[in-house]
Amino acid sequence: MRTPIFVAALGLSLVGCLVGDGAPGTGDDDTGSLPAGGSDPGTGSNPNPTPTVTAAIDKSTVTTELGKTELVTLTLTSGGSFAGDVTVAMALVDGAGAALTNGITVTGAPTVALTANNTATAMYSVKIPTNATGADLAATLKLDVSSSAGSNQFTTALNVAAVYNVTYAAGLAGDVTTHPLRAQTFKVKKGAKISLHNADAAIHITHGDGAFPHETQGATGGLANGTYTIDTAALTGTSGNIGCHSHGTATYAKVTIE
Ligand SMILES: [Cu+2]
Image 1 (tube, rainbow, N blue to C red):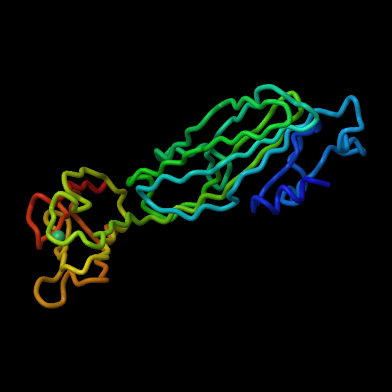
Image 2: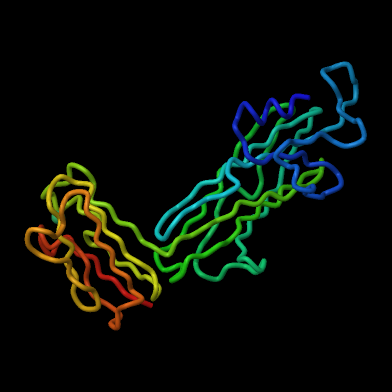
């Protein structure tokens, strides 16, 4: 059985053949499966092997947060000289199975051409806007993979933390042109957190105005390895600027709370 070897070699968490029954199986997808009924064509002695498509995704769970883009890779392998297009229908659903309406998007190839006994990969990109949610969100990415060899559904759990993390990179120092919030405009939902982490050796005190509280100035603010978190749930205003107090207004972002 070469399928389990395939799984182990690539470290894939989910794999399954696209066989004619169209069913996603009963939770054993991660062990791989060849077509039922003993139709494994073997290693070359069968003059008419059953065309198969083996599909796998590389992540069963993605833990992410606001403002991120995550990639899920689909790997398709032709067996039995299958050649043709494989259709991939993408969907994002909430815990109740309803389509997400919060601006999270998935993009990627709706069809993947597969040539006989070869492998093809396709990347699916899930983009989480900064204003996707004001509370932690559990969603699911669904990829319905189908071809003339059959169909199967793959799911990736998408756990979105309602926090927008911003990092002052090491080596940034006083270079305002590389400050992370410079010239940005973004929105968050009420309840989301905005968290600024100083990974630099220099001090970057977080400026806040309007709706947003300013980080403590003086000896304890903006220190290396420090994190300043703004919880919008506690705020009454709806807009203001957030930036680096230590290096001037050119570093500020305009931020709106929805
Ligand atoms: Cu700074």
